[in-house]
Structure formats: C-alpha cells, structure tokens
Length: 122
Image 1: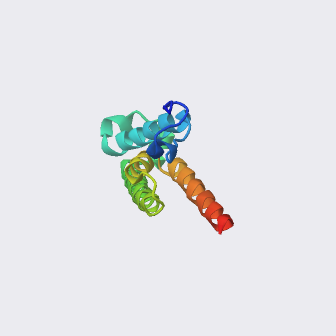
Image 2: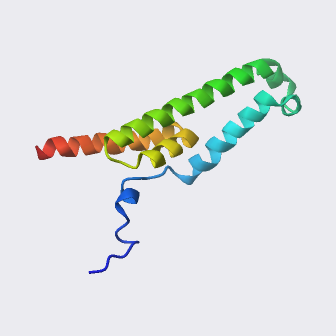
Image 3: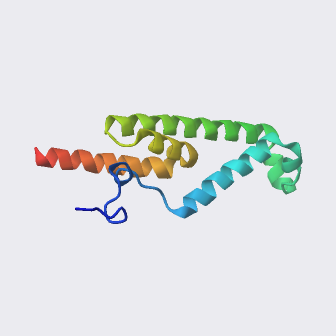
C-alpha cells in the first residue's frame, strides 16, 4: 500500500517541529541588529542619543557575546537531548542555535511528553 508523504511524513520529520514564523523573523533580525550595533561604529552612531549613551559599543558587544554564547549552549543542549531521545539531533541543534529558547521549548515539551507517555505505558 502506498503512503502519501503529506499524510504520513517520514519518521525524521515527524519527530521535528518548528516555532512560529514570527520567531524565524524576529530572532535572526534582533541578533543581526545587535551584532551590527556591537561591531559597527557607524551603525551604533545611528542610535538615538539617549540610547546610544546607555548602550555604548562596549555594552552592545557584551550583550551580543552573551546572546551568541547562550544560543551556542542552547543549540548544543538541544542536540544532545534530541540525540538521547532518538530525535533528529542535527535539525534540533541547528534550529535551536538559530532561534534559541523558542526551539528549545518545543524540544523540551516533546521530550517531556514522550517521557510521560513512556512512563504511563509501563
């Protein structure tokens, strides 16, 4: 019997989900803007004076480095957790590296629900 790919996605895709489009737009845009403000004096000079005085290039660099570091940690954790649960680790890791918490939250819900289902079956 043939299976329609739209009705029955491949197993790897069935074990992967993605956050809403809004996250795919806002997080990369925010990270890009933060990076530009942190690394480009020209971009930083375009900030309104009160904000530019508070969010100095040094402060913006710290914010950017911390944000990138958190995304790397979240992506690594997502990859490890997905691998332990038999989910597509590379997909979860890459998505979480790019999007951070919204992706990790989906993975944690999926693995927590899966752990509950396994415990209830026992």
